Structure formats: structure tokens, C-alpha cells
Length: 315
Image (tube, rainbow, N blue to C red; front, side, top):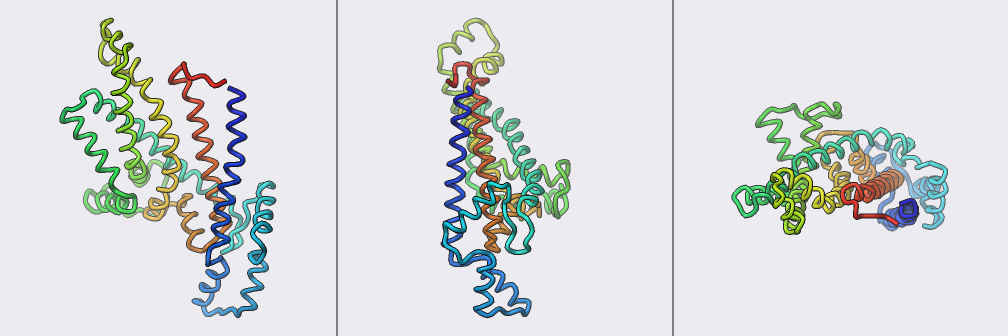
């Protein structure tokens, strides 16, 4: 286990480095930089910069240097624990990420809980009553949810919850995890992923049901509930747990639409602000942190495997 954990941790470092380099390169090769955005914003306020002033501003931010010089400076600051400063208001990036993390993290955790509490039982029901009307309804509804993209799903849910059923008022900022807007937002994030969990749980259950030990357990007189709980569900959940680990990254990027619609100060909103203003430091910081969090959660998922199946052993 120790050797496996060490190897996985060592793999995370070059993966994060490669991810950061690709994102940094895309910003470097882009046709618009932060100075261009600032110039247009200032022009709208009646402040006009000539070409020399624009060149001086690019030199001040270090944007006129070669790619490897800029990337090397960023990596040097990163190794010192500095995520840099925003190009728009010169505020440090890391405090903003720390403030946004509890919002996005709680939304992702809420979505995971919904998937576990709702998705897995529905998948088990669909498998238990396969090829019946209940199975068709559950699978069909999951496919319907999967077919709706988040940018369509978010306004639909808001119309239903605010205008039709008056569950909550128009969302105006973060009000905590016990506010109705939190449950609605977490439900929106989980809906598309919920379809995947239902289908994978159903497929895993049907596959395990064909094994000999399941027939032996039934022959011994165990109730159907004990057979499903002790012998079937536990062995069928390994691919489901793997899928849930991979879906965490999807949660983070779905918060882009949720944060904008609900006016939440999460990582999705930070990324959108950085993208619209070409704030490279903001984009790099959010992407790097999200990538690291995704790989850490997937490592945690791998470590859970032996708890579900004792046959899984890491040498």
C-alpha cells in the first residue's frame, strides 16, 4: 500500500505540471491578453492609452517576455506558495480561491450525497425489476436527464422552482447550506451525473446477479434483501465508485453555470471572471487547484476499493 501510494503521489506532480503548462501556453498563444482587455475597459471610461503606454504596461506585467521566461517566473512563484496577483485589480489570487472553495466544495459534496442516496437505490431497483415497467421508467428518465445540457437545465429549474412552485425567491448570492437555493443548486449539479450512476449501478447489479455465489446465497434461504445488500450491491459498486470519482471534475465545471445563475461566489464564477478579462493568473490558479483536487479525490477512490472488495490488494 505504501509503495502504491508513493507512486501515485509522484505521478500527480508531472501531471499537474503538464496541465499547467498547457493552460499557460494557450493563454500565451491567444490573440488577446489582459492589457488589451484593460485598454478597452479604460477606453469605455474615457481613459485612452497610446501604443507606447500599452507596451509599457505589457512590460510591467511581464507579458512581453518569451513563453519559457514567463512560465519559469510563474513556477518559481508557485513553488514559494504564491499564485500571483490578478491583472484586473492587483489582488492576490490564493485568498480568492480559499474563499470560493467552501462554496464549490459544499455544492459538490451535496451533489455526491444526492447521487448516493438517490442514484444507487434507483439503479438497484431498476436491476431488481429488470425489463418491467419500473425499470423502463427509471432508465428512460435517467436518459432524459442525461440529454439536457447544464446551460438549458439551470434556467428550466429556476423557472420551475421560482415562478411555478415558489420554492424560493430569485437567488441573490450565497446564503449557506441550509437555504433552499443550495439544495436546488446541488440537485442541478447532480442531475446529469445521476443518470450515469443509475445506469452503471443497474449494469453492475445485473452482472453480479449471474454469479454462482448469488445463487448459493439464495439456495441457503437468505432473504432477497440480504442477498442484495451483502452479496450483490457491495461487489457491484466498484465501477460506480470509480465513476463518482471521475465525476467530481464535472461537478466543478458545472458550477460555472450554477454560480452565474445563483450568483454564488464559487470557483466557477472565479473562472468565468478570469476568462472574460483574460486574467491569466486567475485562470491558471483555478485550473491548477481543480486539477489537483480531482486527482486527490480519485486517489482516495482507489484507496476505498479494498474496503468494497477484499480481493483488491495494492502491492
